[in-house]
Picture (cartoon, rainbow, N blue to C red):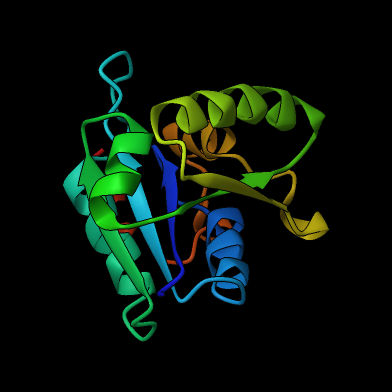
Length: 157
């Protein structure tokens, strides 16, 4: 049976920290699906369609990774795509507290799903999407924190 993990998030933007979790997840799973969830309560900073394209390009040479977007409960999406695992990265204890509650709810919705937590590599732990958005918003170059170049998106902001 193929071991498929769904790596859910808003990925606004997708960072080197996220990339690290995906690549390390491939050591545990046959396939990792990066699932970009739509959050009705949040307005995206980077357009969803373009972020999807940038992530796909970053993993173009890695056939075991694919990218989807969704507007549903993460557990329902995992069931639909055949993922028995949810992959999540943890930078600190605050992340754990938040993710632990979500993992319990996901298990309630889809009892066959297991959440697997990977601790972020130390050199990537300070990176967060919100920090990158703030830096970018005020004109700072953020490409060192991303597995792709933001040139295309920067011209549209």
